[in-house]
Length: 479
Image (cartoon, rainbow, N blue to C red; front, side, top):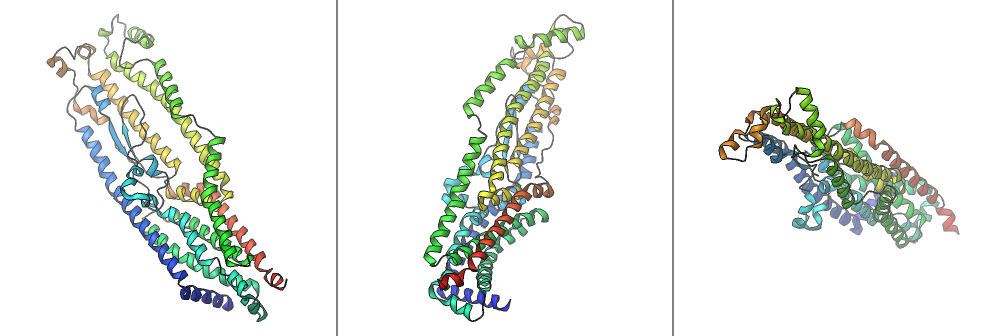
């Protein structure tokens, strides 16, 4: 063990003398610090402001004066999703999907105010998140630092001297690998600090950091293996840059393309056309005389034993709104569920193919542990839709029970008639408080176990490549 530590220490001294290691480490730390400050500042601001913004939106809705109930249906309401603590390190899909939604009658809106649209204000560094820095750039730094760790000894012939002096090839490999692992640990330190200051659940933070630790360990072992198997440092560098390009640039795009091919989704135009056709068959909820509601009208007249809708004890316009809204929501939910199911199949397909690249495996691990994956976004959409349906139906119920049909249909005949069509603002209390919370840490960790297992397999695989390669060093040299 003492010899291994000595070799590792000598390697660190070489990096410091050559200025290469120090320059690469400093550059990497600047990139990490920049991404941490920018992303954590933005997410921290959102986490501080979102609860007050949600409370303000609810207060504004409930503070509206007496109105016609259907006016309040169209007035609408905003709901906000507070990012999970670890989203400060990996926002994942949040900057693209948005975390704010406007709820209104007759339609299901998508999340809005995507932060990615603000990218023009900050240039390309607007998307330089800590997660992307560690996934994409830190492996490059490790390659620059360690590509010649063993091949340099081979090219200079000093590996033969070490072996003949009693140092085994495995010890050389372990010492060089340990030195590079030390660089990886140093570079990982800011992420650890960020996870601690994020105030995330301990279990989620540990799982999140475990993924990045395994990922950097894979690259450390891969770099050591390439350096051990290549005669020249230049060859090792070329091989490692090719591997980085394949794993971090090409593989994610190929896997994503394969996911969309295997589980294709209809275009937005096709979906919109299908939704319009479905809505057309449901009838116009604004028009109680629409033929689509003839059966409902007849049932109401029979139920209350009257001959005309004016004699009903309830407002048929409100009853029609209640019924049509339920049918419309069921139809829209069916389309939404199909869309989300396809997106989940695509995400699961990518997770299934995570063995092709440690980069893909880490992305699946990171976004799930951080609570910023597509499943979390889907749950926000469903909970927001449930809140929308609840308050809209509450207003429709007030429309049916608090406002007479005669007053309702005559509301536009005069200013006085319009004032009579307003109901008490006390009815706006149908709006409930909305608070979205991420999945429990245990549930998120359970989802990432397969991806963590893939990363562990990558560690074993790269370790075997390096181990078998370094044992051949004396034989290759003698040849």
